[in-house]
Image (tube, rainbow, N blue to C red; front, side, top):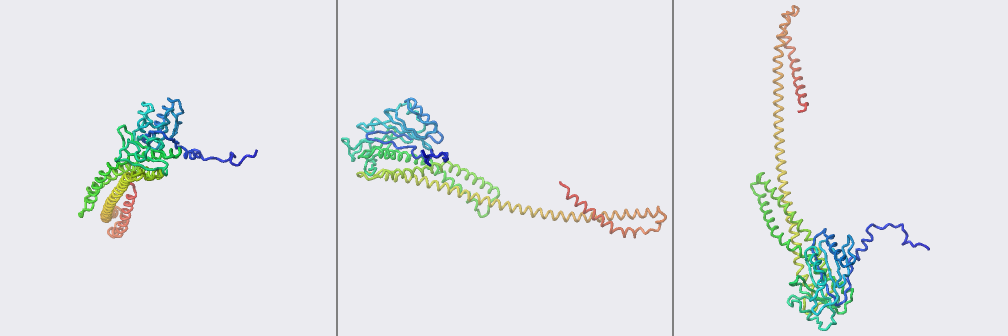
Length: 440
């Protein structure tokens, strides 16, 4: 049988080819058929804690005698009997979604999480950021009325929309009740199971990403007043730098120390805030994207979910972005002031170095003239004493040697003096040159 080209073993796959391909199907949507109720939890636990969350899910699976998640998995869906669990691990949080078939007459009276072991639920790692109950009901049931979704919502705060091009309706009041959960009611008008799964998941993601986007707001409110203090302190430093009479070196060093402290603090603030601000920007974009996929339409006289969220979430996102720009602006101003002050100090140091070199040059010139004067005095003194010795030596020889009795000593000394002076001068110069060449 002829082997097809696609089955030839010669081609070598990229090491991550299968993993990259499977990423598209890593978190498939759960088809939903009304009536069904859900409980959704978002546990904020920070980065690097995926193994702990996975181990907690694995412990539940082993207790229920079902397959646990494998090492390294960031998604696991398992049927526990009465309840189906969907666990997903994200960058800084884990989500737990519990599915339970059937909806009671009061849609939120017996939520899905009530069928889970209480001790396991209470030990879920992390801090609860989002907790909501969702009920998907069929519009064909008796008493279903889009004008009166359920008695469980606050009429003054109720928002609702037609979703999936009118195939379903969704209501919520974005309010956390006394039990710690918010609520979303979805009523089907013939929506398919797969589309229902997609739309409910988008509602869950909208609420999750909305809350994750808001996590930065307390930090931003804390950082704002401190930025104002830093700006005032920076203004005081720059005002001191521009005094007409100039500032002393001690004042400049004090200003430099203050600017260095300001730069360090603004970097600390940026390290704390920039990550959360960037996360807010990303989560806000995800909320907008999920809202567009709901394919909303107006429902009665209610404000649509997308309009309400955009109106309330956009100011928070704008505030975070404004603080980010403010942090960058203060950091840039501190950097400019620091560079200006350092330039002034460098110029002053260069001027001092130039003055020092000029002083050293003057001292070197003076020292050279002194050495030349000393050299001349040394030659003169040496010549004076040398001629005296030569005269005495000539007189002594004339007395001791009869043949030299008539020797004109003064004439000989006078003729020898120029040669003697020249020899002394050369000797002094040679000695000075040797002294300069020797290492200190």
